[in-house]
Image (cartoon, rainbow, N blue to C red):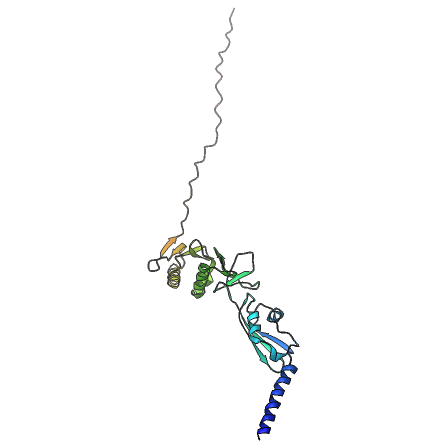
Length: 253
């Protein structure tokens, strides 16, 4: 019995060793793609068809994929006998960094390219982190994280997000929402939305919610028309002077 058990162990170990050498990658499949190409993801992962599938370090392959700026997270798994599945989650853009570029940022301040992104508000006054050119600085991240939590009704109307010199939003119709300091931003956003609902149909220049309990509304100022100067009377011709020449006297003889 002891010899039989030993034989079974040897056969099992031998089978595993044989499989480690014999089983190879025949397919690499990528799921979760939105804008990236499968070829780019596979190339970055380092996984290639023909590699011994049991020798691949799946955690390392996933970390390589996560170096792609547009990838938020990645996992890699084996599906024996020969398939490696790489599942990715792409970043969701919330703002565009300028009007003439494909650079985007997600709510966490990560910078990446997304040429297929829908219309998004532009981010002004942003800076990159001192430690990475692919990450926005702290103030910019705070603004975008808060903006990602704002009510849909407010985010849909936003055309521009200004980080500096003071946080504000520019809405459709050129309405400015002034937030001021980067504190109580969710409360300030709710106050701004309430004011917009109350002012529906009325022209508004700005909404100041720096003190959210007492928001200030600036009405649109209609310029006073400048009176035009009175028209000058049309020129008139002066009357011709009368003939004042004294008639010549004639003498009679």
